[in-house]
Image (cartoon, helix red, strand yellow):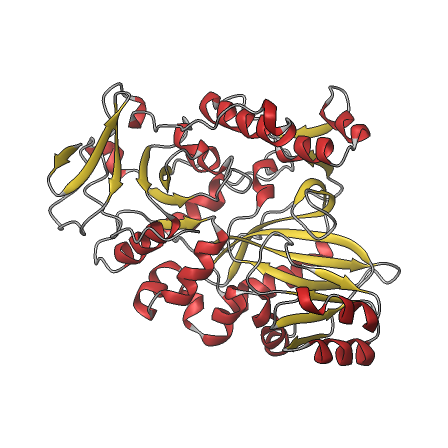
Length: 447
């Protein structure tokens, strides 16, 4: 264990990694890199637990001339990415959240933006930051209505009423009796959604009142009950700033990892200009900053769109933006530099339609669901697009390990390995912590 100034550093395999932050830096501290490197705009990225959301974000930002520094747990796949300038490690998600909070209190901001992909951390930060800290990260959340809208499903009905958003009939229920009464009022089937679970987990569909009674012991209240809408699931990926929609993608979810209500592993991207007013309205009212998205349902027969959920973090489809004909470089520069632009929001060109599949989650889905016919989309000549990171070997190697873990029997799995961060800025020396940016005392709490 080495000591540098007041930072605790651990040295292993030739690399030096920040592991236990203990204090905030003084204004005199700064990066031990060249002035030209410091002059480049930079963002701090807190990735999701795997790489489902954040897999290609470092490359997207580098192509826009914006450096990416990573704040993550030890062993995270992106720590090996060639598109990451610098890696800083924390012991737990709670430690990361405390560090972000500490950083936002500083008068001098070394990153233009902070991007948090780990949704539980997003929710906890929204619940814990004070107004001064919140204004530097998500200024829209300083209003009560937008704050509740960002925090979860329970804030959707109030925001929909105030902002005139199309949502299914909804009610916050505290008991099975209230769920059954709601179903009798709006008609069955009914969906129930918990506020504290993500990725479609905990969502249940009830076709009749007796089904609610049978499942009563497994339900945790309060729950949001919604009228079930038969139709196709639509996803809108958005980049917003200052109440404006800068770019957006529209798609149908055509494959899901763990059932019809879970995360997408395949999308059919299609130009849907009729969705623009909804996306622009959410950007204007919420004033969300950065990458976000909404889940909708397109009702069968009528084609009417209903808003189901707002996702206050980067969504997964931006890795395919180039294939969709959307160049994000200018959008990212405008957002990071906070430049006003009157340009119309970027979106898919009229008539553009492509099918995309996610590495490695779609391959894992095909094996686990025994969808052997679905594997054809990964063969040459099928006109499907994929996101295998051939240009980022470190991340590819880590993702391949996740793929093996997901599809092999437990007895055949390789023991989990830890990925140590590479030297920053492409150099051969040990990685140096950024400017003494210290990420709060780690409380060691689990996820």
